[in-house]
Image (cartoon, rainbow, N blue to C red; front, side):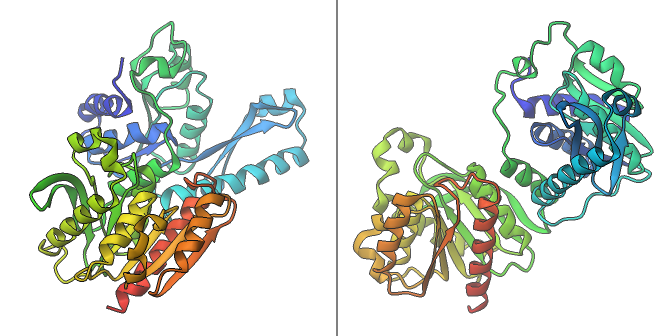
Length: 425
């Protein structure tokens, strides 16, 4: 068994390293879980990482039966036998393809965040998924890679059904599968930990694979003598740096905060994600809701950051979520709290209490339109702010901004707010 997708990717990368050493290779992961595996394979090979987005074209009255697939770049692969047997007309094919093409474009844009596709023409393309059962998606991905000009296609998976693996050898030049159990049952059964992978995790991994020039890495943050784990990313020529203040029950690994941080990095903004509390402190749940403690910790980290050479002279902003937004506002209200801008995502600014009127930093409050209780709290808190401020509502979004397009809206609003107010400094 594999511990998780990362472990599977590490082992798969080791297997592929000797076979493909020196090849002009590109690793493409099948969203979503396959990208986690693909990230580790790309690291092992020192190869660029991308996604290969494909959409099955399903027979109208039996959508689980695919008569073909489409891929980015106008690629279209049909199965003439299924088309004939199912009696699918040209009009029906066109209607199905139109709907799937829209979703294909949306997903590709979301995952890459505006970056162009990695060119596959003339290269060895390694198609990676976290496992194959029926193999329909993997087969389509191999064909799409070939249609986009791949010179050689290698399908690499940690686990797969033996019959499916044998059949896929017709679509790939080589198939690498670490485990092919006859009693596969389900892909997830071969992993100790097999959680769902979010769109935000895919975006973050793709961005991490192509970190912009500058400093980026895991660090130990010094909060007035308290060591905290963090990740600092400061692109060359950064306009400023944003400290992420997570809410209760979250930390530097928050996929939503990492998604927003990646969006800021792409726009030339530095970011610091860090754990506000030590593992021992988190055991006492009272600490998670102690706004003053969290604010003091944030202020100490801000002072430490200003002494780092990567952040010297850069304006500072805070991005707070849930209770973290209250801590950000509290810290910014301190007499020496020289903060350029604050963004609150689904925050609890009301928990900053009387400190709200002392905040001087330009503050943007972002709330989901369907997060009714928190929306009311933000509206009331906004009346107490004396600084430049705005309240922006994301229609249809709930507290965690899990709805399609909701988190992208948050990232865009935050990016524009920080960029504008950093420029003023």
